[in-house]
Image (cartoon, rainbow, N blue to C red; front, top):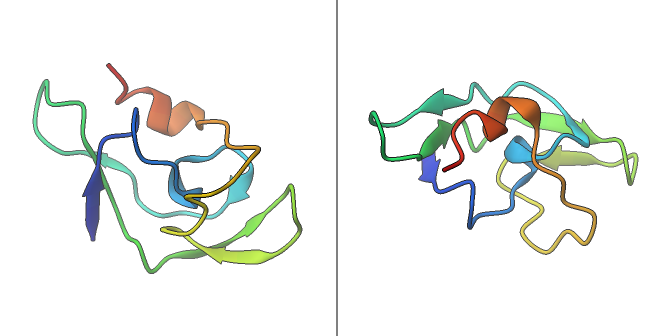
Length: 73
């Protein structure tokens, strides 16, 4: 499991172009951090490639998912 600030960390698990279930959860009330399973696999709809949830930090087309958006400050 990985805990990140979705305002600063660009990963596949937080991107709406990634189709997978990384089990996003809130990590601490009011802290705005998201916890997810970094070993989860899914498919990037932009590239059509399989990706791990923690990949994508250099993605040029990153767009935060509605699920991750709930945790943003």
